Length: 205
Image (cartoon, rainbow, N blue to C red; front, side):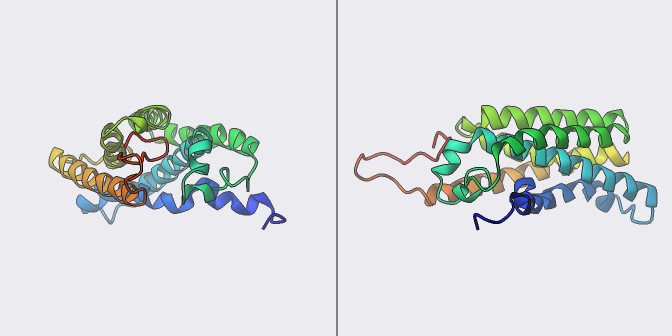
């Protein structure tokens, strides 16, 4: 494993499996039944890649910020940077490159989508550096980022989504975010010796 070239780890560095979340950008097209319009699909596809590039860049930033806590985590310690499988210097180069590439693609789709993606970028960076450490606020922001993807798809395609859809998605994603946090807490049971709950690494739980 040590002799394996670090660039073979790039799919994990980029978290390509997480790109599936950005399929939410196609929700406006699907709910509006605009399946037969190639231009709408083209804009949504470009928006998908723009969002994915920026998301991968922020994932790298998050991994670099959480190196110490990830190395203490039973599952996250296997991430490329935490496991020293990929040089940290690679992350410092890739993160801004991916973010700039994503913003460049976003700019070609118009000001509305560009601004939404910038909002996602700023909120994600604040989440990674501070908000994810705040009790309950972390799940609120996390669920909001999912809903923001639907709003971004609307901005890219020009299809207006109803406030009902956005509200419904926010509640759904809030439930999923809470369920995720509960599952993480179950992996870190109470410390009976000290009579207190074990905190998740970098979390105030």
